[in-house]
Amino acid sequence: MERFTAWMTDSFSPKVNKIAKNPWVAAIQDSILAAMPMVFIGSFATILSIVKDFWEGFPDFSMISSFSFGLFSLFLAYLIPEAIMKRKGHAEVSKQAGLAGIAFFLLLVFPQFTAEGMIQFDFNTLGTGGMIAALVSGIFVGFIMNLFSKWKFIGEDSAIPDFVAVWFNTLIPIIVILLIGWLFTFQLEISLYSVVNSIFLPLVNLGQSFWGFVIIFFIGFAFLYTFGISTWVIYPVQSAIALPAIAENQANFAAGQEVTNIFTAEAGQLFLIGGGGATLALCIMLAFMAKSQRLKMIGKASLIPSIFNINEPIVFGAPIAFNPVLMIPMWINGLVGPILTWIVLKVGLVPIPHEPFQLWYLPGPILNWLVTASITGLIYFFVIFAASWVIYYPFFKIYDKQAIEQDKELLEEGE
Image (cartoon, rainbow, N blue to C red; front, side):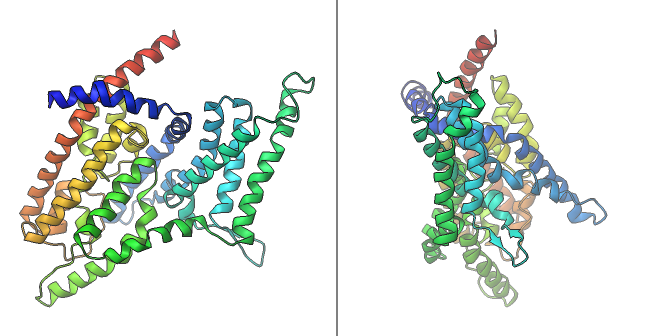
């Protein structure tokens, strides 16, 4: 382990740091971090909603989540092009780029107009479901605005006030951006949101197979997630396989027949300890073992949501997303969890879930016991937790060391 850690520190880390400092990658990280308060608010509102499941008289806080984290993609549509322009040295037009980003994003999620002149959006596209569209539109807008920043109607040496110069210098790139959005949506009638979902449809054909279970859970709950793309992107694909499967399991169990369908949402909950990528172990390390005060604070702030399997605060706050040092262990866990779960369910060490159970926000031990209705399911929680701890630990040590150096640099700059 010491040799591996040394290799990661001396060889691997310097290489990935170069990637992380790329202005385009850094801009996406900046944007996600800037929207973090909305993630925290949405996460805690989700936790409060648990009480309502057991007490009908408790206030419904779901709308707080809907209008905080539920608008996360809309926030990113503004923040990404703004951050790109700042990172590329064009801060004077960063706000205009952000506004263009919002307009282009709202075009790409395919709005509908009623006969009465009202505009309609699928609310999911503004939240987690539209994150890939927000990333694509944000990067595209940043690219166009950066490209046109090389040609200006009004130069820096002009006597015209700077804010007026910005107006005219951003007219053409914004017009180009909106024309492209108009062309895709209102002329070609192409919905980026629908296109993205259709890309994943072939995965449905994998069906109830080992590779189907491993690949879909890995891509949706680990790989794409580390790029800031929400797991809800492939939810239609997952549901098309999982919902009929659990219904069949339920019917077979009631009829006294063998339960065989492993690909269910309930089975996936067995290894999503703390959320996608089994991040609870990493959160505990950050909260109680990190030497960086910044990481320790993030870990403690993310601990309660992580216990309830809400890991947006740590994925976007640590961050794991677009952070090569922490992306790799999340990928490894994203493979190990589904593989081990498939094996233990297939050989019968843990019973295959046979009842619909979507209370994914229950703490792991309770959740595993209820989903499998067995003591072995409860024990399996600790097996997965131990495996995730071993996987995250060396990467956590590397990142903590980097964070300490970054904290020192920020402190020196502040002085």
